[in-house]
Image 1 (cartoon, one colour):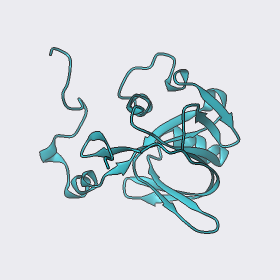
Image 2 (image 1 turned 30 degrees about the horizontal axis):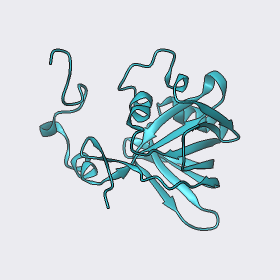
Image 3 (image 1 turned 90 degrees about the horizontal axis):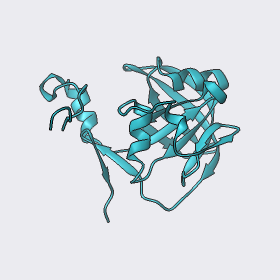
Image 4 (image 1 turned 45 degrees about the vertical axis):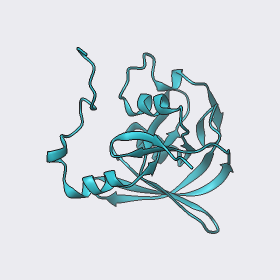
Length: 171
């Protein structure tokens, strides 16, 4: 197994992770992909810390790295798309997380549609078009709050991330 890692090669060793980070790992999180921007300014990032607040209007909240390209793109445009990834789309998440090499960039693969909220994965069955309303520091990230302006709903189960691994919901 030369050159192949069972564990993520850049992961913080378990004994060095703080209790809050270890608590977060115990929460099963739906894997979402946030995308924003146009042309060469497109950016995307998988985000597990995402919450939807029902209401009029509906809101979406997420914790993003303020130094990420997608944070720059969504604050510049004020709009973005949030995809709910499904089992079988682990590679999409890994490409946007920078865990696997993607010559030419992550938007080169999978097929994309341009929308008024930014690029949308052609095979996405569930996604939301969002308008940025606020950002503020929260922990090591920034809490991003947005109004949900459009929703496309599919029937697929969500891809889930739990304790450092992808999993799926089984009924």
